[in-house]
Length: 123
Image 1 (cartoon, rainbow, N blue to C red):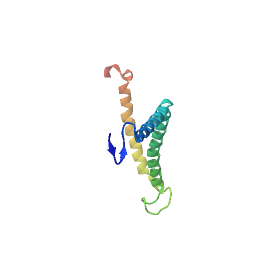
Image 2 (image 1 turned 180 degrees about the vertical axis):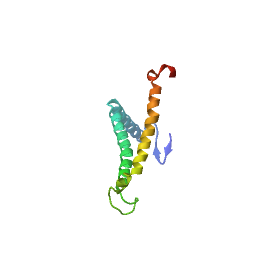
Image 3 (image 1 turned 90 degrees about the vertical axis):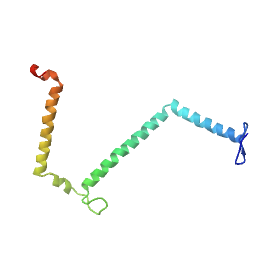
Image 4 (image 1 turned 30 degrees about the vertical axis):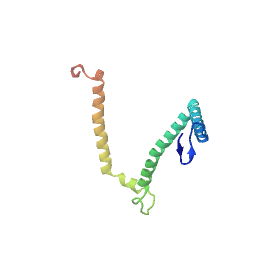
């Protein structure tokens, strides 16, 4: 028989019976959740909520930062001036070069991966 802080925690102790009954209630509750798949649904909903927050919050801050006229923490106004500065001839030239290079690399690799489109001398 052990005595800890003035409580008798013997074989027939009231404290032990209360602890065991609380553990049994917890086990029964967890088994109930597992049997009815409620726990799985709650877990999936919590995972979706977490992933939604981790996705939507940064995207919202990027949108806010693109519309705000000054750096974060500085007073400013919301406007579209940043987007208006993007539409210049030099930016369109860079975009056209990027798209051209991507097509120049993607289309031949697509045909190369599908050998049936290649002439027999290239196989």
